[in-house]
Length: 274
Image 1 (cartoon, helix red, strand yellow):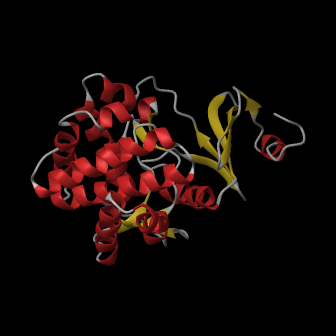
Image 2: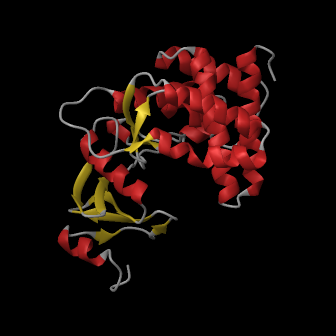
């Protein structure tokens, strides 16, 4: 910890002791810490979506998500995951169905009704601006993804507070507390959106492997209680959006796999397979 950085005030305020190397992302700063001997994670948001996500974490109140121990301004102190299991490793090693079921159960917990007014959240339609722009510039599957997204967003169903970035790395093993979510983006919209990203994960090889998407769509649709065709439409929309962001971020090596997921889902929806 740098004595001059913005984290010092929170280390002092919440009596924190460093317990690992800081992690800096494009949108936040993370500090593994201990407080009164217990492991925790200090997160300081640098981007609007992270600040919205922090408000949502507070609202969830530890039900389905990591518990917020403290929060002030752009900082939250979270309980830290200490379990040894990994959903990504499960998906890569013969337990893909079980990993998907665990994710669905966690997401259902996040979407469950709660008392009190929702915090200020970002409307889901705002997330798809990049896809609309890319469809105009690139054409092809981006156009199909944008058309599907537009239709879904125009007539949303089951509107809830959304995590916004559900994948195998954002549902962690909290030991006796079970599998809990971290790192939400703080959106509001149709609940089906929160299941779409797991089909692009845990990595490109798994996501695009033959037959994988069709099988996992069946598993997720059943466990989550979502009509299979509508779930496939969310996958098409999400995969196109993901590819749009990857192009914007110059992560070119991941663009083609994301587009491949969109194509597989489109073929599955049309009944032609892929």
